[in-house]
Image (cartoon, rainbow, N blue to C red):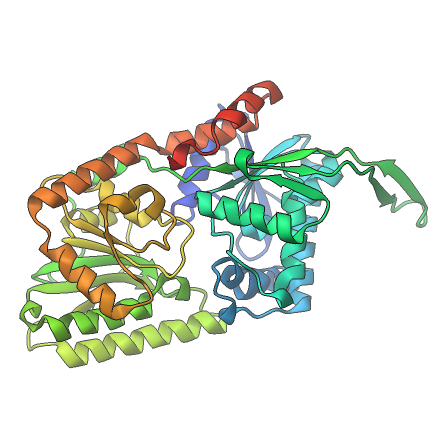
Length: 478
């Protein structure tokens, strides 16, 4: 398995551990290519120590970062009102992908790669041109329902590159359908077959011009080897359920909230990102205590909500709006010995998070738009005796798997959300136990190793991959 990702081993969140499992599945015949530090391109071979293979110019890395976070992030989350487009940043994004691909092609003879996420969306086309490589792309964030007309061109370019890959994976059927619809509407030269989750290239003979650097601009033209189709997959990232269950069962691990609160608590674990719905949640908490003053001093809202991308204006502004609202809610509803909203000090490791999940009365996951949201799965895995309730937004990708047994929350309507929170707190133990059991069964039906095995086999022999693709795409979502 040859993995390409923006960040490498040991990074926080659910993606890096999942990629580590992909790496381990190669049985010692692996490579992992990533950006380390500010601008070092690194590789790790067979899970050994990382090696530096080159560096990127700072202005390219910075421009790439801003294009990803100021433009692609909001567009892909259907939040174009936050999007800022800059032609120079787009150019840096293209250069970043091109240089990264060139360094990889010069350093390895590998011809199949797993490409992780939107930061590297131009990689499939670059690798096909440079080393005729097969690629599988996994798109970890949503694919939008629509893209405003003024932003179509760069998204079309990204889509064309993704269609150079043999496989493109998404967390949910909705994102896959959005992608197919986008190709059908905006990308000429391709035919979509939604019933087979397949996109086929029109039969057009193409050539790739190549200017050799040692021949003074002499142009040699070679016929390009084109793949005729791209298979779209629905493959929601699974969870290592046993890992989280074992952490939650550790009675020696103290709860990070010990000494901070003395009540039952509603837990949220996210960051100050406008996609996460933090401001609507805080407004809902204020409404909750307006309508249920008897709950003051009996329940606390605990938030793990750190800063995010503070060098990007939209994120910095959102963070400070969140802080201002926390202070306002506490000022309005606090008593002498109790505050309604408590920040959980971090950073927290997995063992500490597991205990927080285990002891929570409610887990409130209310993104405005979210690719998947592994915290919801982690919470469910950590429940056992007298389980808590999952309150979940339908706009989280994980809703397709767990929504049927959660309390539905509307992330855009704080009044409705406050009522849902109260309902979640009032559920009987029998009902909570039944829901937790059904959700745990669903987690076991889609474990992390299924996701790992999917892409390991797809990037294996063509014969085995072909059989696997035809049978898998929708199975994880059923």
